[in-house]
Length: 109
Image (cartoon, rainbow, N blue to C red; front, side, top):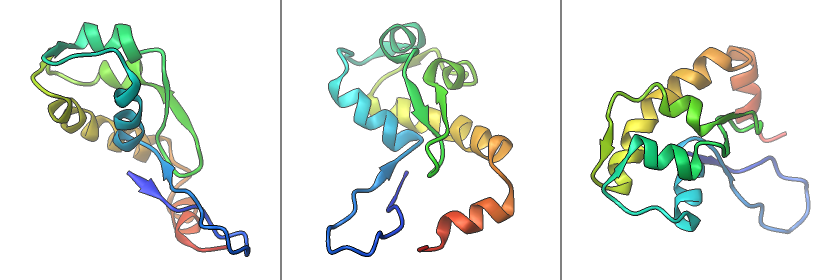
């Protein structure tokens, strides 16, 4: 997932904020990990990485999210990302600041 941060009023194009599986995908591009890969392979390579789970930059170790995944082997990068999506959504909902915080994150100011 990615969301553009609020505009600061200048003409510079803002960069998007990556969180959840979008942030994992970005880290996978630079990781020394080949597929198929086991959950242990992923944990050894990226489990210590702190991954933002919301637009505010709150993060969680990927190893914590991996513990919630039932699959033990991932045939491809996309399968891994698909399996991580649900646990990231649950974690975000359980650890977000509530409806008001979510609405505030969508506003451009």
